[in-house]
Amino acid sequence: MALSAREREAVTALWRKMGNNVGVYTTEALERTFIAFPTTKIYFHHLNLTPGSKDIKAQGKKVADALTQAVDQLDDLPGALSELRDLHSHKLKVDPINFQHFGHCLLVTLARHYPGDFSPVMQASVDKFLSHVTSVMISKCC
Ligand code: HNI
Image 1: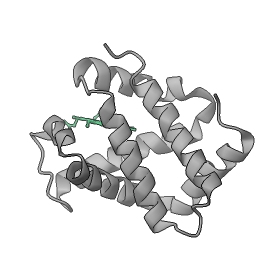
Image 2: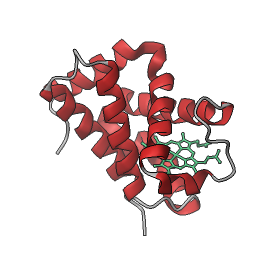
Image 3: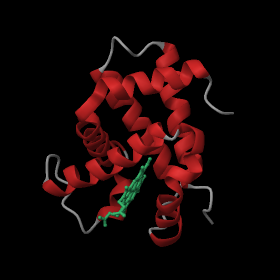
Image 4: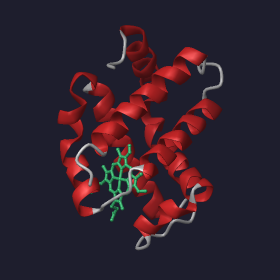
């Protein structure tokens, strides 16, 4: 089900608040993902995944920009993410479970940085947004 007006407002308010830090927290969420769910690392064997490395920051920035674009296009997530969906499902062949691992880690990361903002409504809203992103990203899979 689509995000309600209240849920959209919660997500966009959090994104506004993060401002230029979306890349920083997305990078941190990636680092957390690789440690909490080490099987995710196999897709990035060609990169240096040491926390704080140039590679991981660059990857974090790319994912952050895509998520920000998704927040800006909440009415058309399939349109916002279609190229990335094709890349991840057809070319990279990312197993769908990995999107859940990353989404979970991003939620935890954001909650740690914005404890005062993370009411149950905020948690549910960000979780729903990330679930929608995931379902688009895996929608052409297998
Ligand atoms: Ni993902 C590259 C966005 C989840 C594995 N990924 C990208 C790029 C973007 C991106 C943007 C850069 C594309 C380009 O250069 O044209 N990735 C996203 C988003 C999510 C996500 C928005 C989740 C919401 N990616 C994942 C997950 C995995 C993953 C969960 C695997 C565990 N992504 C990759 C790999 C690459 C990649 C692998 C290529 C990296 C490289 O530089 O070679």
